Length: 405
Image 1: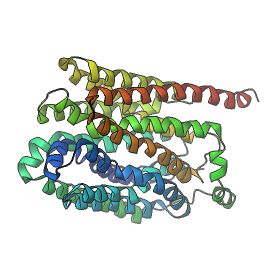
Image 2 (image 1 turned 135 degrees about the vertical axis):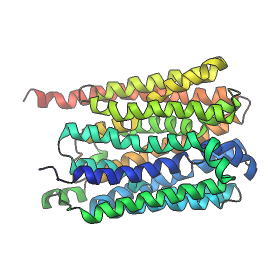
Image 3 (image 1 turned 60 degrees about the vertical axis):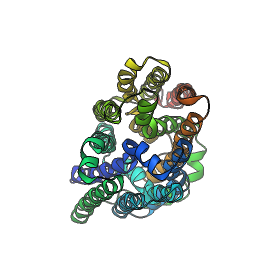
Image 4 (image 1 turned 180 degrees about the vertical axis):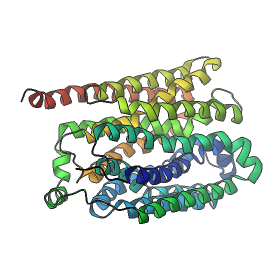
């Protein structure tokens, strides 16, 4: 297949929407203590509310994947951007844990259209494998940039300027609306190729069972669960952990998380391009193991090393794009069913995304405190490392007959 001429322009529109997605994910994290106190919520209740969008994701991700494969990326990313805007506005109007839960849950209604559209776009518009790996790393850095920027400027800039957390969320919704408009303008002006033959379209229609029957893809789903458990637990709670467990100020905690975010952006943009088929699973396992060690240091180390350990924990940042690279390289995944494959992947992943913040918040409310909560994160991370090792062996067995043919 010939690479479409305007692929990098379309890629830029995708990056704009994914940047706003990162804002939506991180919006409350730097204000979590303020919001929790204002709404009168416990840590466990906040963990439940902030994880509600991932609960919805579990149901809507496979549907989103089908929608992307059946219709086009234009509508998919537009609706995904609208989900970000709407959720931020609804959060700003929350008056209790229940209304906050609903507001955050709305993010998960069309949000999977962003998550699954991104790898689907790479599969359909970037047939060259090297360009595809590079692009996956670059677009995956976009939400990291959005989230890092919000964490860095919320307390010292936005709250000082706007006065309340509600106004901060309204401002962020306006930014997301502008970036979604950028995507719409680009999509309406480019010529769009039909990347699927009639045979591929027919095959894609019945591909769910074929995808789920692949041991390689099922292992992708298991490692995705472990990854998102860790990613969402830390993404939601890390600033608060550094404040309450590490006895840092809100500004200092936000500064360490933001600095780690800058490090994460560089790693996310560069490492996935090195995730070639012979080493992608090993890279995944190694980075997840390093993250587990960093979390253990935050849990049990002296206060002085918690900040530097947070920087080491940024090694988890390239894991999502590397996980997507491994999925796109898996047997049974083609450009015709890439949307569905990624929708199923995100559905499995978000079971971990729900469990992570909820588990950390609930355990932290018990006598085990943050030490026990972070230990749970470490255990899940090392289970993911073990499954990544199994995944590598299965992939090598699957590819071995091809290499000798």
